[in-house]
Image (cartoon, rainbow, N blue to C red; front, side, top):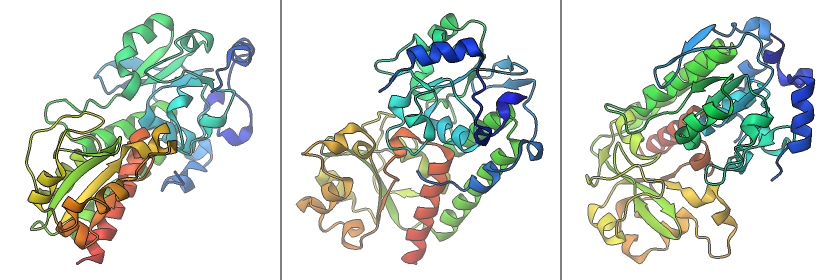
Length: 344
């Protein structure tokens, strides 16, 4: 299948008509991963794409034999597809700010904009054979199907509100699915192995007697990331079996839930795990932007908190809010393990 050659071949696997359409209509507007070595393997060393897959929504999807145009909208997929050398005809490049994927600066990839202001014309212009759809574009699934009825649509959305949801299991299912779709089963397996190993490291290093607080920094404020449900940070409690310093109901809100610094201080966590949401958005370029570290360490109310006094604060990678992929969770787990081990 010509489409599945690595990007090093330099050939864009689009039909001539689709390429001309993209040239006329193209929208303008971290880091190396543990799979980097395997991503450079020749296609002969990889598997072959499956004929059909069961996607994250539980639907069986028949895949095209030789897709000439592939669209991807799922932030959790971009880095994986990029590492595997998968060429895209369209993607929401506006959502790739600072994530390090090559699609962001590639004008041959039609920019679908953001989920807030999507350029839905791209789903027609790119004439897709295959669409990888999820995360911020998940609620547009039916609209996308209507615009590209002939394309095979693989739903890769991770439903964080599903019953008995576990982020670790969902990320592994998501990665396995991408491997099956693109014939990169070995690379997918390696990503999962690295992820599992990072979890085991962090679990082994953790002292369950030490309490943990999850936070999200956004708009100059600190918000609560509840165990299990809190965006990005919450699932870490379940994955590692962390003991929360505060057990309070929360939501999956991308900005976290309201909490006072006094309530954080009263719970006196031994550790704080925090995502700086603004670090991954345009807010980081504003003059009044305060980093998560500044918000925590410059707060008078938090100065006597154990986590602050002992410098036991773990910051998620700056681009986490725009990726939340298996690679960044692997990075986070290893950083958590490093932090716990250093204080053992």
